[in-house]
Amino acid sequence: MGKGNKLTWYILIAMLLGAASGALIYYNADAATSDSIAKNLKLLTTIFLRLVQMIIAPLVFCTLVVGIAKLGDLKTVGRVGGKAMLWFISASLISLLIGMALVNLLKPGVGIDLSGASAESVKDLAGKTQSFTIQNFVEHVFPKSVIEAMAGNEILQIVVFSIFFGIAAAAMGDYAKPLIKALDIASHIILHMVGYVMKFAPIGVFGAIAAVIATKGFSIFIFYGKYFFSFLGGIAVLWIVLLTVGYIILNKRLPVLLKRISQPLVIAFSTTSSEAVFPKLTEELERFGCKDKIVSFILPLGYSFNLDGSMMYMTFASIAIAQAYGIHLDMGTQLTMLIVLMLTSKGIAGVPRASLVVILATCAMFKIPPEGVALILPIDHFCDMFRSMTNVIGNALATSVVSKWEGELAPALSDGGEI
Image 1 (cartoon, one colour):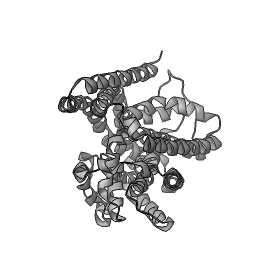
Image 2 (image 1 turned 90 degrees about the vertical axis):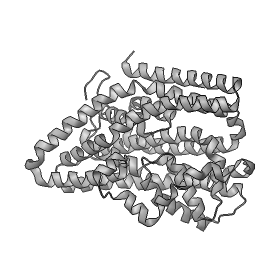
Image 3 (image 1 turned 60 degrees about the vertical axis):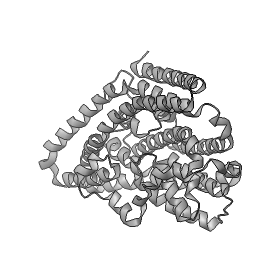
């Protein structure tokens, strides 16, 4: 059994052990004790996520700069970037429309009990919505200091700086090659660190699952059954659309791609963080046959512009909350909401509980009681599992498809091959 398969099994075993441990705590301890234990268990997940987060900023910078420089000329950068944005915008609109269609068809908000909502439980989220004014949104996108952006893991700001840096390096030609070579070496060193960091993944998964079950128990699935399974229906439709388009373009290579990214999908599902698999996804896409210059250019952009699962959830949850409060939104208002979400979602990469922050801001904008976000807080962890996994499949497909369009999709490397 390969090392990758072993880690996947360890992660799955950690999920089961976490669920069992959480249930043991939930059914044998009082609420205060369960909360206290859950808080300590979450530290295991925090350790793993922080180890991953320390890699993200330098990896995005190095890989994106090297990717742009390796493309060779500004014309190629523009062509590849244009194809990527075509995919990103199309996928974003489809995701938002699927969420809007499903929530109108299934009306999950009608059955939600409003008595569970309270302004207190969304107090922390409310403080973050200030960043979504037009002025602060622009400030969130364009960095005043790349050091500050890296310190705060502001992925979109790092992407903007890296694009300018990479374009300038490409324009300078041979003079910049020594620096590009150094950054290329640095990116491979960071990717090598991934192997060490991923050894902590099962521990992080165990902590995440055990903590949520310890405080909520299994009854949460019954209480939020209609909402949760309606959302799963939307995710299923989105997967069908994405995989169908992927099969049309990639043909028989699609099953190979899905096999390659199975481990990142499991980790994203377990930890509810698509960021946690960025380094591993980079490695697997290169093993699949995507050229490093394409991967290092498209994937960082995708993490800022192509969060398909999160966007589907935003329209779904925003309109479901309106339904729960008996607020009728006509089609024109819903389409306006869709456009607002399309814009604001592009600045959420790296923001904790980003989807909920955007939903809260959108509810306030359309006069929907923002306290309604408290309705979905208990189930959000489970929804986040599926939307994080969907974000990963969306970005993997985007990178692979652009590679195919560019004629840069090589045969997949064997399991024992080197990157």
